[in-house]
Image (tube, rainbow, N blue to C red; front, top):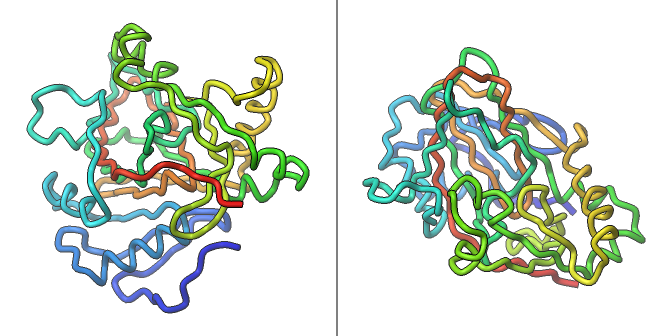
Length: 283
C-alpha cells in the first residue's frame, strides 16, 4: 500500500501534485531557515510522493543548501567531485558547448555503493532557455504493475551494481583501480523501503551489471524487461526547471532521467546527496 501518515498535515507549504504516479511541488516553503516542523512535513511529503520540488528559492546560498540537506542525514562526497573544492559535499554538474549532458539514462544515484544514498537535492544554478527537464519514475509502482509470478520470482534475486559502467570513462580510471576503491556491490532486485515498507524495483540501466545466478543472455533479457518499467509514462512525472528551483528525490523509491535536449546551451546544477543504508528485502 502507498505510504500515508494521517497524523501529519501540511501547514508550511501548498501541495501541488505533478502526476497521479509521483511527484509534488511544495509551494511557499522557505528552505533558507528550515525548522523542525518544515523538515517533518517535507520528509512526509517525500515519503508519500517520492520526489518533491521547490520553487522561488532565489536567495538560497550553498551553505543553506547544505544545511537543509543535513537536516535529513549525513552527506556523501561523490568521487566525481573535484579535489580541493571548498564544499566537497556539493557535486557541480555543468554542461554546455564543450560538454554534452550524459545523465540521460534512467538511474538511481550511487547504487554502486554498499550503502546507496537515501536522497539527492538538486539546485538549478544556470538553465537553458528551453529544455533540460528531469523525469522521475515511481519504482514501487513499477514493481506493483509486474505480474504476480514475476514479482515472486524477483523477490529472491540479487543484482550486481558496478561504478565502472559509468565512471571508469568519466573519471579516466582503470576499471581494476576503480574497483579497488569501490568494489561492485550486490543488492536485492526488489528493495523494501526502510521507512514506508513499500517494495520497489531496484535495478537500473546505468549501474546494474547483471543478475546473480542467471546466464548472461537470460540476465540481459530480464534486466531489459525490468528497465522498461521506468520508461512507462504512467509511472512518471516531468519537472520543468526554472531559476530558484530545487528537486529532492528518494533514491530508495524512484529513478530519474535528465533530458539532454539543450545542447549546446548551458545547464549548471548543484547536487547534495544524503547518505543511506544497505538495501534489504523483507518477505
